[in-house]
Picture 1 (cartoon, helix red, strand yellow):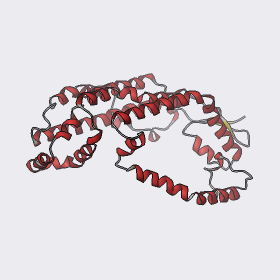
Picture 2 (tube, rainbow, N blue to C red):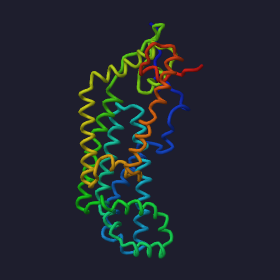
Picture 3 (cartoon, rainbow, N blue to C red):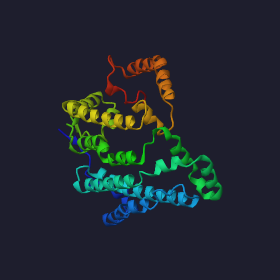
Picture 4 (tube, rainbow, N blue to C red):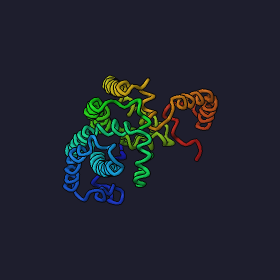
Amino acid sequence: MSEERIPKRSEVPEQFKWALEDIYATDEKWAEDLQKLKAMPERIAAFKGRLSESADTLYDFMKLSDEISVLCDSLGNYAQRRSDEDTANAKYQGFLGQLMNAYVAVNSAGSFETPEIISIEEDKLQEFYEDKPELKLYKRALDKLRRKKAHILSEAEEKILALTGEMGQSPENIYSMFSDADLRFPDAVDKDGKAHQVTHGSYIPLVQSEDRVLRKSAFESMYGTFDKFKNTCAATLSAQIKAVNFYAKARRYDSSLEAALDGTEVPVSVYKNLIEAVHDNMHYMYDYVALRKKLLGVDELHFYDLYTPVVP
């Protein structure tokens, strides 16, 4: 039986690979910047108790926050993409772990930021904008932060929440390692008996094929494999739900849905109205599914029939 294999990374031409050297030329350069991030808690601590003292102080702190954000973006992109190249590579999993530790330390050191900024009187903040026009660059960020006043805790409580960051990320990390590194799917087989390698990346192209035998085989390969580990997946999802519920309750939200939407300033009513609008118009989807079934010429439409084109 012939087979179609996905090439190893070493076999892929350079022009089709990420140019991660544009972020850091070497792993050593990445490590140098990680040390810079590890030194940030000390610089952050110098501002503790001072954010309301003057426009200059608040501006300098916001600039430092920008510097940290840019540094974290570079460090995170490099480490995550290196890990994505081979999720089983322990070296870059280690990079991600080191980065997360440093990030938690930074967040813990800056736990005073939100309580202090929220405590600044509105009149005083307006004076700051007048005293230092450059501070207006951060007005949107400051307004978004101050809008969440009802959900901001004391400095001590914020520090505790910051320290739980790595623990709260664990369910997602566990699932990622399970799904992307450890899980292997059987080959899918087409109508001619040719084998096709099934991965998260190849799955959609396979179920877009005109060959229904291949589509069904790819579907059964992926979901049949996940079915064997449904208890593991359920336990991981349960842990994630417990984590998001914990953070929502800790920040005094009525639900984890409200907490999630609040990050992008979307009211719960808008979210629910969107769902209601979909439910009210489901008949259009039923018409589409019936048409797809007819155009594909099948007696019964399956999940693996939903991606393949209905026209040449």
